[in-house]
Image 1 (tube, rainbow, N blue to C red):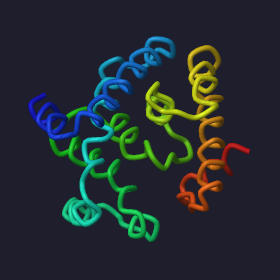
Image 2 (tube, rainbow, N blue to C red):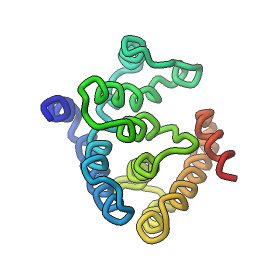
Image 3 (cartoon, rainbow, N blue to C red):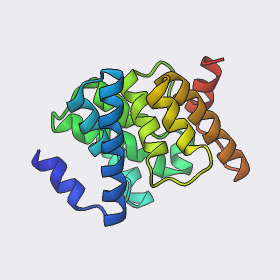
Image 4 (cartoon, rainbow, N blue to C red):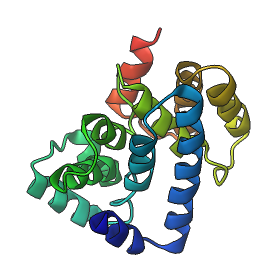
Length: 181
């Protein structure tokens, strides 16, 4: 795993700590929900590899990789960090389609995601370094009830957060919520 280790080493200590907390929670969720342990670990370790790139660098790298850049990504290039990281892992032949899907959509969500992708969305959103009122409750639901229930709760919580900040949700997040009604 030279590529992954090299990329992780380039992240700030703060980001590395976040990634390790996500990996720990993914390990727990994988055991509880019978997800492939190596896929859970790889998706957690890979999800933020491109998170600290500049806006311009993300746009350039996404174009180089042939990734779609729609209006939301053009406006907020940070939304490209998942797709870029997923493409890197795919190029390096690390993981498989479920890992790449999980990393690709870990920020925006998407309808009909695999359980692994839902678990990563949840783990990234509620790892213990995150500080918001519903965090512990959503983690508890993910561990004691179901990934689907926790996924819906986190999507709703994310929407409330975005609305409170007058930020536009990604169209995929809106489509996901609509598909779950």
